[in-house]
Structure formats: structure tokens, C-alpha cells
Image 1 (tube, one colour):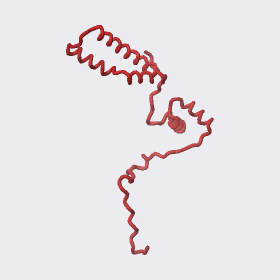
Image 2 (tube, one colour):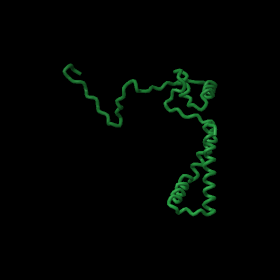
Image 3 (cartoon, helix red, strand yellow):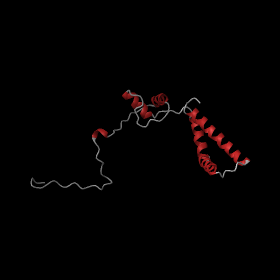
Image 4 (cartoon, helix red, strand yellow):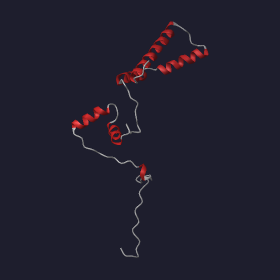
Length: 140
């Protein structure tokens, strides 16, 4: 290239391949470490329910769990799973809403079947409440 020639133009990338403009201080950089099985097992035990990366980062920076995605502590995971399964299986919210609408407009006949359904719904609500309280480690 001679002195009078301009440098070749860089080919423009399509918008899909262009980097978003971010200030340098906002860019996160990854850091890896190699652990033998015993070291990893020890760290996982110490981390408990916390993600391993968040635990290590918190220890390295001495500020507790440094993750921005902190999850609440779940004391009893089986109870939480059971409560969520009950919520997923039942149409409890929908059914209670339909009963409440019918009661509000005065069209809910209080037959033995309806009364039994209401008792069942109340029992499910109390069971789910108890499971969630236990799962979150709260006192009832």
C-alpha cells in the first residue's frame, strides 16, 4: 500500500453480528478454576443450597453470596415440591373463583355435594399452606 492510498474499508457486519455498545465497567468476565473431586465435593457441601459459583464468588469477595440471583432458602424441598404439585394438579383457584361468583350473585345452591366440594377445597388450601410454611422454614 502506498502512502497516498487510504486503508481498506472494513466490511460492515450485519446487525445480528455487531456487538452492543456497553461501557467497559459493565462487561462481566468469566474466571475458571480447576478442582479435584475432593475439593469440589467439599465446596458443594459448604455451599449447601446456594449455586456453587455464587458461593465461591461470595467467599472470594468476602461479601456473602454475591450473586444477583439469590434464591430464598428452602428448608424442606420435598414439602415445596409436594405443594407445587398439588397446585399444579388441582383447579383449586378456578373452582373457588366460580363458587365465589355464584355465591355473590345468589345462584349457589348449598346442596350436600356443593358443601362437600367446599370442604374439600378448604382442606386442600390448608394442606398447601402447611406445606409451604414447612418448606420455607416458617412457624405456623
